[in-house]
Length: 134
Image 1 (cartoon, rainbow, N blue to C red):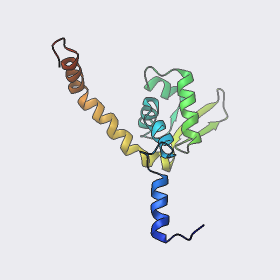
Image 2: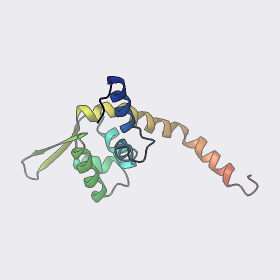
Image 3: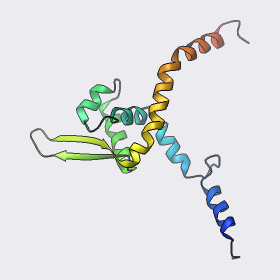
């Protein structure tokens, strides 16, 4: 195996994480963070720790199964931490980790963009779906 220069090693490392390549491991993370429940949960945790039941009430339409599954995935990925307080009933709180906090500005921006531009998107869809549309 030939020796690589530092520049060649950097180029190889960059190519290994090129999300446009089908084999790029970053695609797995892009898939995860593009999930609507992930985005909503991260946004819901922006102001600090929240109880499981509070998250369920805040995020309309999320089933218990999806909330649990998404929280476990976020915990596994190091974005959320889970704290269990022994009491009756048991109290479970979720909080963003520093890694989750670093992603927060991006998901907050996506949420705000969607809330701001949904009217324009609906208008574009109506125009596109009109019978005389090109």
